[in-house]
Length: 372
Image 1: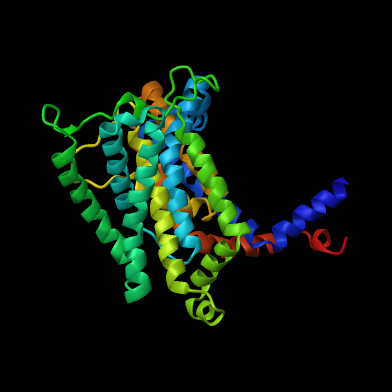
Image 2: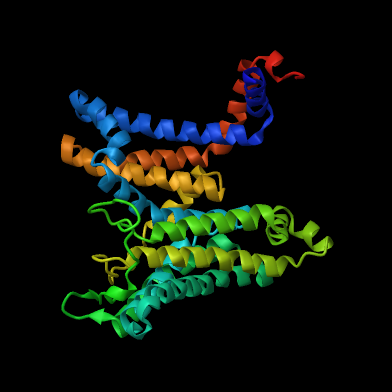
């Protein structure tokens, strides 16, 4: 049995395209951690080792509280990552997740402030509102791509800025708090329910957003890999002309892909702001979670399940960065450096995959991948 298992592993390692992608992502992570460690060595060699260990173990440093906070930090990143990954799997590069997230967040907060009559359904309707407005914002580059062949990268990135400034206008018009110069707080009934009743999280902010993220992961995985609709989406992504020849309505599928991608980003915006203590501001800067989602999508190999683990890893880095600053006095920007390097390495995934496969072919014994 053991021999068969090892033989199967070597076959997967030698012949599977997924193996090279997984190894490339691991190389990207290790590369980022190595660069971060070198930076800490340059700043304070005596604390570099402790700093790296703190980054790696920060998630478990304070028990269930730090673990719950890690997951809480991960939720919007997981959702924006899936948003980007869903579009990418259909051949589209949705770089406008930030704008879709911002517009979805406004819709969710607006409902959270004004629709208090909904009672127990309040937070659910607020999340749905975020998804619908995010879907609407995502459909715009989809329509332009389908009917005018406008590059979705250009269209979606321009809509990031339009969404940012439009949200400021809408906040000032409908939900503005003059005293604090920012948006009003949603009603308590609009906040995502805490998960402290289901699992012990003590003082962590872990809430129902993580359950929503898991549902989105499961649904998108099933759509992309188990349905005819998902097959059509991926077919259009691979070759629009061949898909049209095969009888697939490529315009409809392009629009639907961007609409679904936008809806997921809108849900991410809802999970970010339907929580106590975080309010929408009137600053003109773009929300970084949408751009981080691009990196997480690359690191997760544009797979919903891969994005889930990549997003949790990002949350672990954020938690490690918090404790890094508290215990060693290293500046938290080291975490940003690590994440930035991982992003660059992830972008070079195709380069890594070429040489990883070459090394595998040289290292793995030929006898191990022969006939069983």
